[in-house]
Length: 102
Image (cartoon, rainbow, N blue to C red; front, side, top):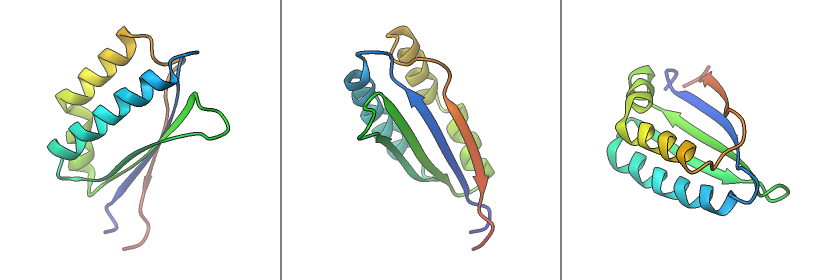
C-alpha cells in the first residue's frame, strides 16, 4: 500500500460556530463513506483544549481515489454550505503525505 495518500487538514470554526461545524462534519463523513470506496479513512477530530479547532485525518488508496474525492459533488456542497453559513474562520491548512512503506 505504498501508494496510500494521507491528508491532514486543520479547520478553525468561526467564533460560536463549533457545534454547527461539528454537525456539518458528521453529515460530510456519512456522504464520503457512502460514495467513496477509495477513501480508506475520513475522520474529523475536535480539539479538547480548543473546541473551535478541528483536524481531519484522511487516507485514500491511491491518487485516483483522492482525485475523485476532490471532485465529488458532496465535497463541493459541503464547502458551499460551510461558506454560506460562515462556519469557519480563515482558510483550511492542508498537508498531503504519501506512504513510504507497504
